[in-house]
Length: 578
Image (cartoon, rainbow, N blue to C red; front, side, top):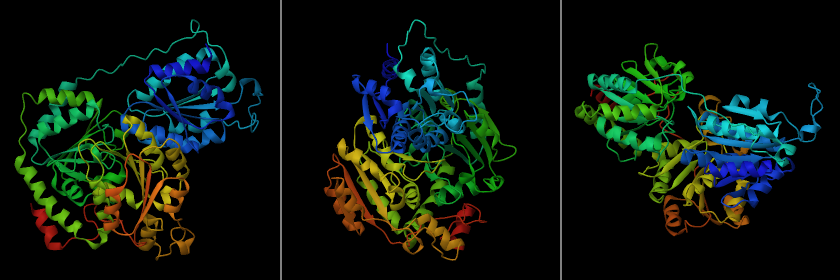
């Protein structure tokens, strides 16, 4: 059996139906096998970065393994932004890179390049993968494929890279001689019921407990469904990370927003930072973006219990005396549900206090003139159907989306989190479409959209129901805002006078043959959203004021709950007194 044919047959066995990449000499045998096979579709991008982000978008939306490929050298290097995003945000993606024929290698280790378009991909991607290897012998192919899919999904999920020379792809594979991979046995035995009992007892003992949910919980998974059951059983306030923002619908009475040291929900920050006496964190990294620069000041009056499958995340302590458990959160939640059959939690008065804190702060922010852009996001969310996957790029619009997009039961809101890669949203929305073949939305800024704008051709070619919404304030908004605060308003590289500008996106969309619109007000946006055909490709350019800001924002040196624009001293004192 030809090796590349075997790879494709194995991918089909793993449930892979869609694969993303860009054709090239060193990967041609693999692509030929994909395109000849039944039951698996090859989707061509226009830059390998687009293919990588498409695979990441599908993996994030589904929680299941996705696949992308490239040729060697420049093609493989173009994948790396997506590889890094998958690594930092725990997305299980297997990347295949073509490589120089084995017989072209010289054996001279100090030689700068072994041959045309040859690059040592494996050593380049090792810091941003769970596993990366070069397959030099065809008899190792089966073993490495099985190992790759196991590692991508074992423990904390993440990307794997298999670098396969062209001659290995085209060789004949004798399956009787091919060795198999045997997963190692788990040496650590955890008494999940005991841990669950300890945590629930702490929740019962606390007066003001909160549950913090993170990105390790995949929306729509069985794990997520168990988490929702747990939230209902505990009946305590829930906060999330930005990436966990979509885990609870916006109108859930226990949803008290996402925390963030700069742009998190004002009420979430106050409740966590100043009011809570216990925070139980499930699958959340607790990085500085969530706790503030001095994490020891975060929730100083609260006990912190952290549960994470990644031991290294737990080494990054928030409090020196915190309690943590390195274990599988999914198994722990099941154990907690079991324990709660015999134990009851009653924190109704605390939930009511949280509502009293939340309501005036929501009202304050909704009436702040600085929050005009958030009204556009509120409107966009009104027109997204319940099963829509919405992919958000990086910039001010990411803040507005996190703060104001009204999540429903089955919507997914995906971000480039740890990596923060501009150019994520459009290809991620393309990839996410293949989850259930339903319309998706990409929300971008004018800067981010230009990073992978070429993938509009992919949208047009396959007639994908992807609606791209470009919030155009003709600047790199977050940078401009930073420059106003710290660089005397010198907008170098962020506005037209500083060397940056943006095109007419409506014209670009039309050039790609996509239904394109330009709006200048909320009223025009509402009318456009009412009339577009969501089953077709669309591009909506929304013109915003160049001085648009992202608020509320915590400024350097402030406690994270004290955000600009500042609330009245009397109101703050009233809230803190609850």
